[in-house]
Image (tube, rainbow over all chains, first blue to last red):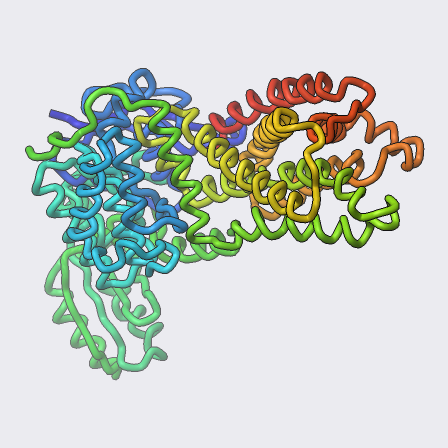
Length: 327
Length: 263
């Protein structure tokens, strides 16, 4: 049974000038992790806000657990939990008071709300900081509390809007583990992320959106197959050899493809695995010392590059920077 | 699926929701003790400074000036308290706390209602502190106990009324800085160009005219009438009540509409 459905969702801002959602269709199945992937400004957050009844769509329809987000917002709010991009916990309350407050707002009686808060603080390794003000928490602790806050009412549907943005790798892994165990218990998770790796690791199904439109959909494996072939990567010992390395790999590239570099590694898509041997020979002939040479299946990075024509993360960082300086 | 076991059954209650949010707002005082200073010590400083610095010059004795100025200082302090409403709502929007509230199955009105209820408690606290301290300094309720109580009710009602325009500013403004700018531009002239510290007759004609129609003057004159048992000409209580009704009638719907629309 499909748990979250959207059909032709449109949402515009600035009197129609910005089309944040431009006809988005998606279907997420119950008990799975559904990934909404795209660069900043693609419309991910707008989609989440519509599906959580915070925004009214201009056109199209969407339902969660069979309830229409426009006509039955109360019912939708009863079955969802929302964790926003910026940790929406109250800094001036303790962790315990935050969770207690939400329990009370959900209509849970005081003693039960208190024990539910304690239980969640324990589960999210926040028991020691339970009575401390959230303003003293670290970034990772805030995210965990934010996630705990969205779980107080045991929602069937959990929306995670860029849950790991800005987290260190260890906290990210911990959060991934927590998300997986929630799904194992039957929760349906809708996850937005700008990290391709995150979508790859977590999501059962992915929708890639850009400029408010769905540009690809499928399982991570399906999306990778779409790109096809393999990726050959070479890391020259001396970064000065990057251009020369690119030139060599360009000769092996699949028709119509060009190598690209992140400043350390040169990657190129190839059709024929024999290219690996040829790469070794030609690099040797050119006298380029190589630290690392590998052949692998395409990552979602390549998928994204193929579909949108631009890399997700580089652009991301610039936009994040702009966003931060605006704040 | 173990999920639904604790799911809140049925509707949640508007009153419980409002009280929960009011409690949350008051708990903030624990995290920011400077709020207590703002609510308690600052008005007392105002009281002492105004009475003893200006009292002798404006009136013949600071003791007589205390009688005159206390209702003014009381109303002025209460008029500034709804700043918290504006700033706290603004910060809640910026931090995403309002999103969290809106994604919960609670009454929309509970968020603003809880805010204003909490401010009512802060206003009552300030009034108690200021009048208690003034009584120590020698203020006498010449209008009797009923007059005093009626004045407190009226001043509290005025403070709650001012929460609405301040809520409107807090929801409309994009940054806390602009909340401060707009808030001060409105509250400062209203409280000073009034009968709070000097009789309005002593002001230049144009300012006197403004001060006489100023809602703050009406509230202060009413409080004076009730607390001092004197007759202030021009039916200030009627004026004050009409002003409060008018301000709420305009700004409550505006604030709520903004709240609904702000993304």
